[in-house]
Image (cartoon, rainbow, N blue to C red; front, side):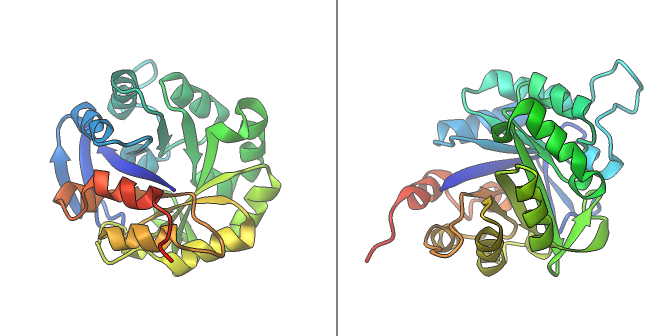
Length: 256
């Protein structure tokens, strides 16, 4: 199981939100590149980077207008150039051109969220053009229902139903987030995450609420619907989890 340290970008800074609420923000660093290097030095094999500004605005464009690279995309470019591990990147990706732009700036994998709900055919097109290994879908759920537009809108779509449709469209990787737990350090939703994996056959990356290595261990030991990865954010920044220990736990086999 892969451990993905999270770097959430807002106005170019490394931040964490509680339950995705813009007004509940904590800034953890002005230099995301330094943070990325730190996680790489501690043994990370992947990074999970989120463009919060893009998720909220629904666009990768800079407010300054066409031809200007948004600050969070500048940070993506700089992070990818500074480290030797792959980056998956999401937030505000709405078109094939957006996917191409993000991959061209150094991301190994682009995460499609809102567009997977609003324009699911674009997911099929992206996979056909870039390959299933370079495309992931973000399924963010509140009480089991999919949320979109930076978690600001909740639909009537059941997470597992969206997952099954995405699988039919060629998706292999999904990031599943329990919004109510995100940034709260209340523990990851193991049952919902493993159920999604079991019902869809997708390679599911768990996100939201990871508070201790016990959460990592619980995800690792799931038998039905095995979990492919786990994203850890706030617990790393507060020191509640040591990244090296989490990686060791994720790679260990369950003791009999």
